[in-house]
Amino acid sequence: MNNKKQGNSFLKRNALSLIVAVILVAVYLGLHFWIAGFEIGGTRYKLNNYYTLNLYLMGMNIILAVSLNLVCGITGQLALGHAGFMAVGAYLSAILTVKFGMPFIVAILAAGLAAAIMGFLIGLPTLRLKGDYLAIATLGMAEIIRVLLINIDYVGGASGFSPIPKLTNWTWIFVATVGTVLFAKNFINSTYGRACISIREDEIAAETMGINSTRYKTLAFCLGAFFAGVAGALYAHNFYIIQPNVFNFFKSFEYLVMVVLGGLGSITGSILAASGLTIVNVGLQKVPEVRMILYSIVLIAVMLFRPGGIMGRKELSFSSFKSKKERGKERGTSGN
Image (cartoon, rainbow, N blue to C red; front, side, top):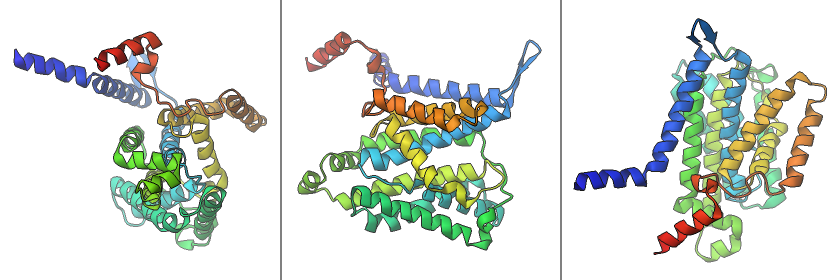
C-alpha cells in the first residue's frame, strides 16, 4: 500500500518532466523517420533535402540564440562577438576531423572548450566594461578572429577550409539543441544563475551583497562561448566548406536580433524567435529580391507591437495555459 502511494506521489511530482520527455522522444523519432523516409500504403514520405537543411539550421540557431541569451538576457551584458566563438569552434573541429582524423564527438567537445577558453581570455579584461564599450570590444574580438583566419594558409585563408566531411545529422542536432536548452534552464535556476540575474537588475547592489560581478559575468560569457563553439562544429560539418567571411558582424547581429525579438532573459522567447526567423527566411527564399525588405518589416512589426520581445522575460509552462482563476485556486491551496 505504501509502495503504491509512493509510486503515485512520484508520478505527481514528476508528471511535467515525464510529459516533456515523452514529447521530446516523439518529436525526435517522428522527424528521424521523416528525414530517413518511410512508406505507408505504397506511398513514400520523406522530408526533402532543402527542408532538412533548414531544420538543422533551426537547431543551430536555437543553440546560438539560447547561449547568447545567457550573456545578454540573463546577465545583461551587450556582446556582439558570438560569431567569433562560432568560428573558433567551426575551424578547430574541422581541423581535428580532417587533418587528425579524430571522432566527431571529440571535435565537438574540443570546439566548445576552445571557444570557452577564448571567451575566458577575452571576457576577463573586457567584461569590466559596460554597455556600448563592451559591445565594441566583443565586436573587435570577433573581427580579429575573422581577419586571423583569412591570413592563415593552414586553414585555407580567405578561400575557406575544405573538404569537410558531412557528419552532422538529426541526432547530433537534436541532442545538442535539447542539451543546450536544458543546461540553460538549470543554470538560470541555480545559485550562479540567480547571481547573474541580480547583476542584470542592479550590478552595484549585487556587489554590495557580496556577489563578484566580474566572476559571474565571465562565467556566463564562457558558457555562451562554449555552446557557440558547439554550434560552430555542427555548422562546419553540415557543409562542404567554411569561409571566414561567413562569421562576420552580421552573423553576430543576426543572433542578437533573435534574442531581443524573443525577449531578453527568456529561453522560450529565444527558441520561438530562432525558429520563427528561420521559417521566415525559408518562406522568403522564393522572393529573394525583396526578402530582406520583408524580413525587416516583420521585425519592425513585432517590435512595435511587442517592444519587450515576444515573451518578455516570461517562460512558457503548463501553468501558462490555465486561467487566472485556476492559478489563484492553486496558490490558495498551496498556501494552506
